[in-house]
Image 1 (tube, rainbow, N blue to C red):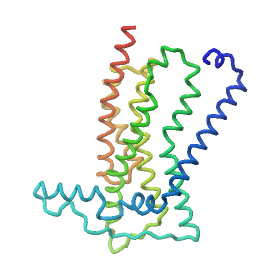
Image 2: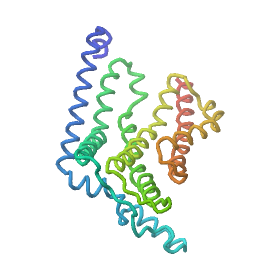
Image 3: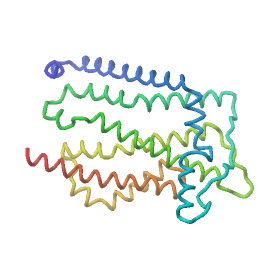
Image 4: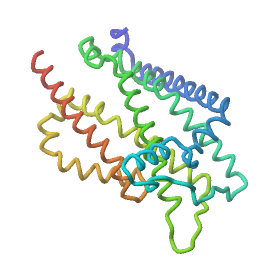
Length: 267
């Protein structure tokens, strides 16, 4: 298979890429169909979950507040904002957005597999062995990021922005604004959590080293804050919440780069 792949012409490579992209789209469509099949649960329980004071994150914060002797300081009794649709097609657009994002998230491992299946035949056995289990790790990090964005960043951002007071102005957000906030946080953290994978590949090809990452740790901290400011709402709490796991992932990436160097030195 690898020999045949090396002998393929440019047009044959394009045809193979087309097949992989087509299968990826089919996988996303299957994910969309699953979301549509359970649309009531997805919309009412998952998408609108962070709007409820009964959401798991708020309950944990409230329990933690009591454990620390803070009373109801971290408890949220109500959400002082309402969602509305200001156009005739607003609700329909929101529904389509939920289905597409949900389909993308569900199909992510399959899409990554298709990308890997396109790249793999061009690698030798040594290279394939060095990235064994890559689909699992990419998917694991992605879903960890999605869960972090959903259970930590999204509810904290919704609570902060929805209840932030500015004189006597009442917050009446559009449903699309609400969805864009939550989906950007969820997908953004899912992608940011791919940092160790990116570092692994860069270390494999020798573009970065563990010493390089250690040397520019302070610079990375500044970049981390910038990234956090881009993918989070303009409040300090959300930015700090997303900065911490990125810093942790950066430290993990240093260890990964060091292991790659050690393995290459042995070989």
